[in-house]
Length: 306
Image (cartoon, rainbow, N blue to C red; front, side):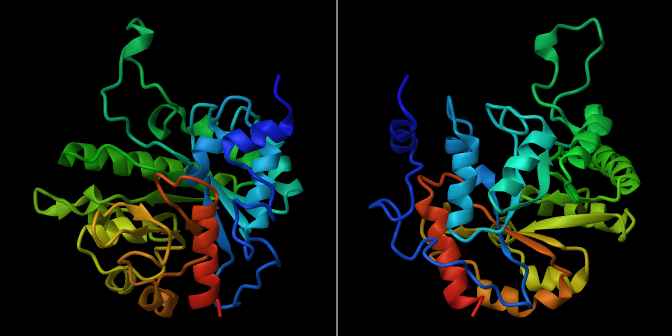
């Protein structure tokens, strides 16, 4: 078996101060302006580390803390919802790293129909979801001390799916409330597509209790869909307590480090009071190393948290 140092090298988890991370990354604890929430990370950004064979979860979490991240949002992967741990065990790892676990991403209405008990196990949804496993999911989040249950995506390709997705959200939000948690729905671009004259985004927000169902606004995917995040804040004030801080390359449209793409973060943050923002999470789909979110933290520190 390779030793821990070898694993860290091969997996990309290199101790701070080495040649992999810039000198500024983690050199000093970051002080965040009080008017904005501490910078968090959606750890899907580093799934290639946390879900690699033999991953050293506490070491990865320490690396995340050392680049200036303060809060975490998790997602499922090859090693499961909590990276092979029970929620309470993972929560303790997060706490030991000096981080706060805010919530976990989980699927909503599956994009395949439900199957009977006698059907082949291969026909069942592969991952737990809010339609079929909401009690277990909420209980797990509560066990981990999370404040939020977050739907990562849900079937919304027809009006029937949009309505059934909304029903799933209402049930999840009610159940979360019994554990003193809240519920939010994370958008991609498709939420803004019109189905029978209405978008899933508008339907969910207009057909649910504004004090119980919220949006986690992915700033990049909203921008890619032709939406102005600030206009959305003003249309639905207070409904966006969670944000994904994601940028998109100006040429390829692919996720890139924050501040290097086309999303207008300065204007968005300047108008954040309309959104009700409480937690923000850097996310970069396809990040290659921890240097990517580290550079995003530094850009935010220099240009937003100043």
